[in-house]
Amino acid sequence: MADQSQVLSAGLIERQRVGQHTEDLVPKRHGVSDALIMLLPPEEDHDLAMARIFSDPVAMGNLEFKMLPNGYTAKDIAARRLDRDERQVKKEQVNYTVIVKKSLVPEHVVSLIDDDEYLPPKRVLIDSGHIDVDEPYLVVGCCGLLNMDAFNRSASVGIILDSRFWRTGISSAALYYSLKFGFDDLKLHRIGIETTEKNAGMRGWTENVLGIHVESIRKESLYLGNGKFIDSWDYAIFDYQWHGRAEARLRSKLRMVG
Image (tube, rainbow, N blue to C red):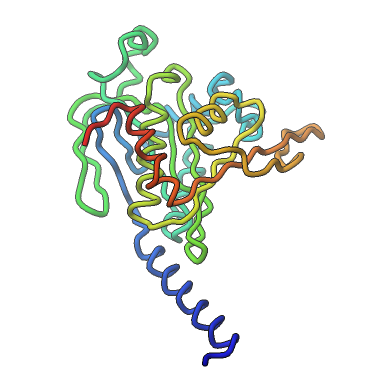
């Protein structure tokens, strides 16, 4: 009979094997094309729109700990993009720009958009081929998987969205495809969602749509500057919860069929 050390060694080898397999699945450039949104690899022509979103006090109102005192410039966003590209190459992240084609901009939002915000059609290369954006489009945010730990098959998911597109279903769709890729393609076991007490929208979505509850509250873990800290409210969803009911609940919210 194997002794305890042999059992532990076998378990470690198995975890290393699974972790390596997960790392091998992380793409350098990944994208999603859906009836409502597209998720594209971040590119230079997205930087100006992302700088505007990151500098908007409404869009960033629940993310004070990510704000810069004077807002973001396109140069700031470019540095952020390049850093995150490097992290994706290292298998630590999967990064997306969230875009909406002009014909799919919700009617009540159209009047809020300036014509020069639309970017021209383009072909975007991804690891598995390409995605054609066949009409002018808007950059409306970013999302993706962060803090990836292949050995423990875990990550966290996050999103920042243009406030003009709140309550349009775009955030739910972007998070759906991020979670789906994490659980279905990368075979992750746990994906965390970190927010704050102030962010009632994200907490409500997590609890009411995904059906999960706060896992822990990390006291004064997020620094706002000027000696002020706030708490992080941490949630987590597991693969068995996703496949058991959460995915179906989210698909129902998005009115997906099949």
